[in-house]
Amino acid sequence: MSTSYEVKIWDLRRKLSGKTPSYVVRWKVGTKEKSKTFKTKALAESFLSDLRQAAKKGEPFELVTGLPISMAKPADSGPTFFDFARSYMAARWVHSAARTRETMTYALLSLVPVLTKDLRGRPDDEELRAVLRDYAFLPDKRRGELRPEQKAAFAWLEAASLPLANLLEPAVSRSALDAVALRFDGEPAAANTVRRKRAVLHHMMESAVELKKLPGNPLHAVKWKPPKATGAVDPRTVVNPVQVRALLDAVSQVGRTRGPRMVAMFACMYYAALRPEEASGLRRQNCDLPTDGWGLVTLEKARPQANKRWTNSGETHDERGLKHRAKDDTREIPIPPVLVVILREHIEAYGAEKDGRLFRTSKGRPFSSSAYSAVWQEARRLAFPVEQVASPLAARPYDLRHAAVSLWLNAGVPPTEVAQRAGHGVDVLLRVYAKCIEGQRARANGQITTALES
Image (cartoon, rainbow, N blue to C red; front, side):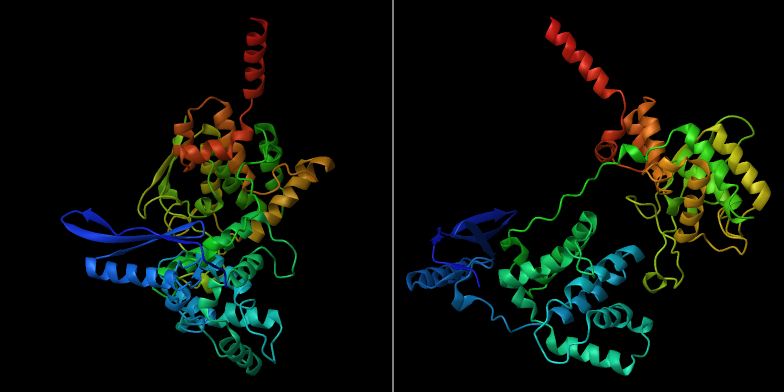
């Protein structure tokens, strides 16, 4: 456990918040400043006296909690990490979207098997993860019966899981952080994956502090940096309008009905910059499609895809509000005549589902991400030469949205308007698409040349 004998304790400070005063005790352990607020002066003076007496006796103070050893919480008390992880998931389940539940679970699949004692009879990690994923982290009504070997794995986890308070030891916290940086096969995980899993661990520790299961967030005492993740769109993925037309034509040639049913969906991702889950939720009543000129799409809902075990409905698609917006908020997107024509032709050919949904299979089911991704890859092979097929150019359907936003920005549409149509904040928009805004370098070079020649 990391401790220090370098302790500095300041005098009591009175703080007035509204009409009620409070009393703040401030001290420093090593280089870390600590403070604790009390409602009464007597409680604050008692705590301050305890700190001073411990420092006078020469007790070491913990760096994480700031408390002397005699006042620190014993490491073997409180819930185990596994127990707290299960209660954390149960508390977050109702308020989380399906994909968030999935992200939290997969972070914990990396953490729980690592934060265990070295007990005999350890099942292999794949068996432990299966028990966690399919049983331990699901609500009671979603759980099935465990097989005998799964019961043994579950019992082993309950017995072997480290106490949650052990994470106050920096070596244990570091092992947790190192675990989220790896894939299940032991290889380094992608930077964005590491950041998502680390965020889950951090929020979990903050919840433990809030619930008074830990005196402080143990991650704050560990010097650990996640890998850098690029948040900007790669310009090499951005297609131009001519290439998009070739791709949409190629999509129409894939399969007997599957490709033709997806043309308008992919067109919405490009001409209206819809996210795939927004296109999945698009309804006929959301579309104003005049016979001439620009139309309008008013987005109300999205239908993101996730594994059935995480959704509320038990289906692969749950209906949700729009990303980054209030529950019942909408987003209006003017659409160009070319998309109006494509949508009108799609509705004439395939109609709409009873609830108005436009894009679905011949049996009325939403397209899965694997289905439309397979069609997209086949369309790339039909539309592009070999060297472009091997490149990142429009490698994913989502790249159509990136191409749309890049086109709008380069056409001179004000960033505020682009952000409104795309459902971004302006700051995020400019950061994500900074590398896709053309003409800035030549303009800057001209300005510098003028300055040098003056």
